[in-house]
Amino acid sequence: MNWLDYSIVLVYIIFFLGMGYFFKENKNSKDYFLGGKSMGWFPLSLSTMATQLSAISFISAPAFVGLKLGGGMKWLTFEFAVPLAMIFIMVVIIPPLFRSGVVSIYEYVEKRFSASTRLILSIVFQISRALGTGVMVYTIAIILQAVLDIDYVYTILIISVITIIYSWQGGMKAVVWGDAIQMIILFSGLIICLFYGWDLLQEHGGLANGFDPERLQVIDYNLGLGEGNEYGLLPMIFGGFFLYVSYYGCDQTQAQRLLSAKDEKTIRTLLLANGLLRFPVVLVYCTMGLILGGLITLAPDFLNEIAVTTQKHFPEQFATHGVKADLMVPVFIIKYLPHGLIGILMVGILSAAMSSLSSTVNSLSAVTVEDFFNRGLSKGKLSSKKYMMISKGAVVFWGVICIAASFLFGGSKSAVIEIINAIGSVFYGPVLVTFLLAFFSKKVNHIGMNVGIISAVLINLVFSKTMQEIFNIDLGIDIFWIWLNFTGVILALVIAYLVSAFTKNVPVKHIEGMDIKIKKKDFMIKEVYILSGFFVVILIVSYFIPYIF
Image (cartoon, rainbow, N blue to C red; front, side):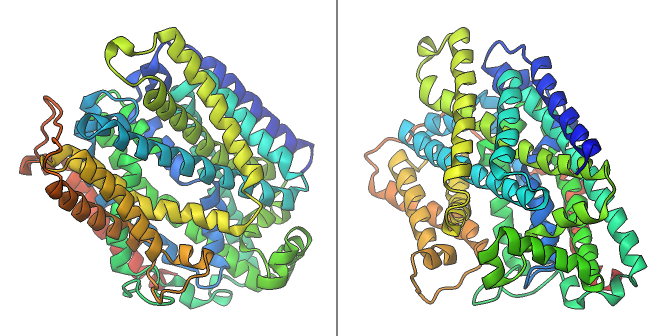
C-alpha cells in the first residue's frame, strides 16, 4: 500500500466517525435500538445481508471454492434454504414479534414462559455472539497483518474503536446505514476483484485450462451421514431452513433489524430483497473463487506468493497443511491490483468486519439493557435519561469485551473457534422451538421449555463431530453439522411436550390479546409466490453450473 491507499482508508475512517455524530439524536429505547421504528426496507435489507455476509465470507468463501481441499462451488448450497426461510419468517415469526412492541426479542419469551427461559436464551446469545465476533475480528486482523505487515493489534484496535464510537453515538440508525454503505463497498470490491481476476485469467489461457472440473459441482445427493458426506441436497435444504429461520427470525442480531422497520409491509419487502439478493451476491463470491483458483494453477508466482506469506506469518500452518487458503484474496489484491483500488479493497475488508461488529455490539447492548436493567412492570422501568446512559455504557462494555475476546481467544487455540461454531450449530434449533411454542402452544409450560432447551443443546453437543474432536472422543457418529439445526428442533419440541405433560401442576402462561393463528390466506401474498419461484430458480441454476462454466 502507498500514500493513496492509506488516504482512502483514512477518509473512510473519518466518514464513519462523522456518521455516528450525524445520527447522535436518540431520546429513548425505540430511537437508540430500533431506529425509532422508522427504517425503510432498502437500508435494512443491505444491513441484514452485511451482517451475515461478513469479512469471513469475503475472504473464506472464494478460498473454499478455489483452493481448499474438498471445496468448490458446493458453497452455494448454503443458499438453497434462504428463500424458504424468508417465507416462514414473514408469515409466522414476524407478526407476533413486531406487534408485541418488544426491543429484546427474549422479552416475548418471558411473557409466555418465565424470566428463567428469557435469561437462558439471553445469556447464551450474549456469550456466544461476543466470543464469535471477537474471533472474527481477530481472524481478519491476522490476515491483514500477513499481507500488509501491520501488526494485528493495531488492526483490531482500528476496527473495534471506530465501530464502538459510531455505534455509541448513533445507535441503530448509524449501525444500519453504516452496514448499508459497507455492503455497497464490499460488493463493489467483489466486482473489482472479479473483473481484474478474469482479465488476468484470460491472459494466462482462460478458466478451462486452469481449473479442476470437480470444483464446479454444486448439487450432491448425499444425506450428510458418514465420513466425507457434506453439503448434500437434503441436509442443506432441511438443516439450512431451520438454521436461517432461527438466525434471521429468532436471533437478536438480525431480528432487531426487522423490528426497526416502520411496518410489517416494510419487513416483508426487506425479507423479499434479502431472499432474492443473497444468492447473486454469493454467486459472485464463488465465481471470484473459481477465477482466482484457476489463476493460481496458471500463474505459479501467485501460488508462490501465498506460500511465502503463509510460511512467514503462519509457520505451523505451512508445516502441517501447506498454504493458508484464506490468504488467497488478500494476496491477490496486494499483488495484482493498482494502488487506489488496493485501498478500496482493504476498506471493503474492514467494512465487512465493522458491519458484523457494529451489529453485534448494538444487539448485545439492547439485550443487556432490556433483559437485565429494564425488566419488570412499567412503573419499574428506567427513565429515558438513565436508559440512554446505561445503553451507551453497554455499547462500550460489549465493544471492549469483543476486543478482549479478539486478543484472548482468537489466536490461542483452534479449539476456541471450533467450540463457537459448535455452539452456533447446536443452539439454533432449540431457540426456534422456544419461539414457535411461545406463539402457538397452549400446553407447554416454562419447566418443559427450559428442560427442552437445555436437553436439546446437550444432546446436540454429544452428536457434534466438532465437539467429539475437541474432547478426543470417538462415538462412531459422523453427522454433518447442519443436521444439528434440524435435530435440535425435534429434540426440543418432543422433550418440552413430554416434561410439560409430567408437570401439569405448573400453570401455562398466555399472552393476552396475542393468540396466533396461521390461516391459508396468510400465505397468499405475492412475496411468497416470488420467493417460492426463486427457490426453484436457485436449484436449476445450481444444477447447470457445471455446464455453464
